[in-house]
Length: 86
Image (cartoon, rainbow, N blue to C red; front, side):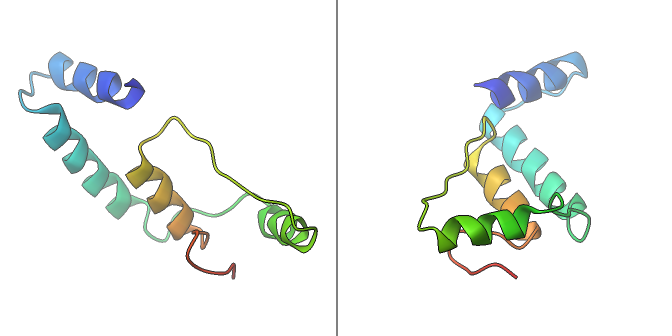
């Protein structure tokens, strides 16, 4: 509910009425467009993941963000569960 509350609160503050799901969808559409070509992984991320994989460790991502936003961020930096790292 964190992002629902945040987006809902901003919408309320600025007088935007609407369904929270639609407001979130539109917010994420804009966000995912803005981040194109702008996100970079932190230094050492790829080598850390590579080393973990070599050791047979399982990896996971934990976030309070919605799955759509998490997947968009990971894909933008070249990490997603369906592909190998750059």
